Amino acid sequence: MKFWKNKRVVVTGGAGFLGSFVLENLKKRGCESIFVPKVENFDLRNLADIKEMYDVARPDIVIHLAAVVGGIGANRENPGKFFYDNAIMGLQLIEQARLFGIQKFVCIGTICAYPKFTPVPFKEDDIWNGYPEETNAPYGLAKKMLLVQLQAYREQYGMNGIYLLPVNLYGPRDNFDPRSSHVIPALIKKCVDAQREGKDSLEVWGTGEASREFIYADDAAEGIVLATEKYDKPAPVNIGVGFEIKIKDLVQLIVNLTGFKGEIIWDPSKPDGQPRRMLDTSRAQAEFGFKAKTSFEEGLKNTIEWYRNQTAK
Image (cartoon, rainbow, N blue to C red; front, side, top):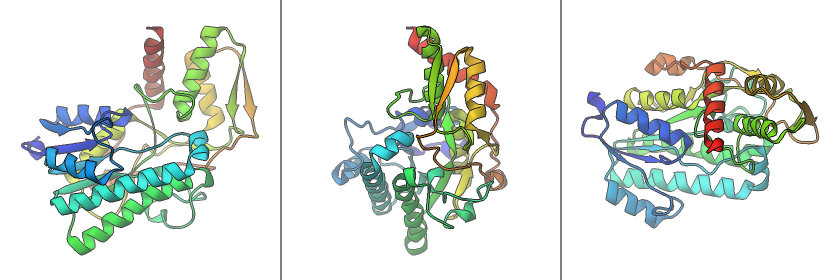
């Protein structure tokens, strides 16, 4: 609680999915001065808007969550946009944070930064051992450049910037738009909507053989806030759970939890994405005592219930 007393904090992306949980977590810890730059007022790709935001907010700490992001389909359709928007936003936010003398910059990276064939579980030291999976490489590389920038700025200017690598997020308030959503909200929407519409089948991309790890958004927020309080080193840190599930098993679990009774039709012409994803989470536990608390089934039930309630209105 003492850490946050009289601290002014900017949370970019604070109006988004993960941001909403980070704000709740900060408030619980006694942080009273939180500034969230709304997209209609501050375009964080625009240098003048970034300078104005820092002038207005005068932050001690920046937590940079904002990203232009989506699932495999959105990444395939927008490789240039995803690269440019994420790179230019992060590069300028960090440079201006240095010039403004901001005490600490907390940058949220992405698991998409890891090489396509990273040995499981992914260790932070493996991050440079290959090229990312092709469908999300532009996004992953844009975010990974921010790690280089923060380490270079620490070395040359003594700037305190840390870099966190959260695994795939899910939970209430997630993005359920089928054009840009990730796998869990996309599957929940398909199952719940198919039930309501009386459909007897639904289609799922890929073969189902790829594996993924998922962290409940409230747990990820806890990890980010703990790292902000307690971690001040240049090495990147994974924020995850340390388990993996095949997409075919994930589909079956969501089918069971939603009660959908129809047939699952796989479309192997669509990409699976990275073959496997699972993080080594030992560094986060050792450095700042973070361990995810929410069981996967409990988190899925909460997310399904939230979506049902939202769409029943």
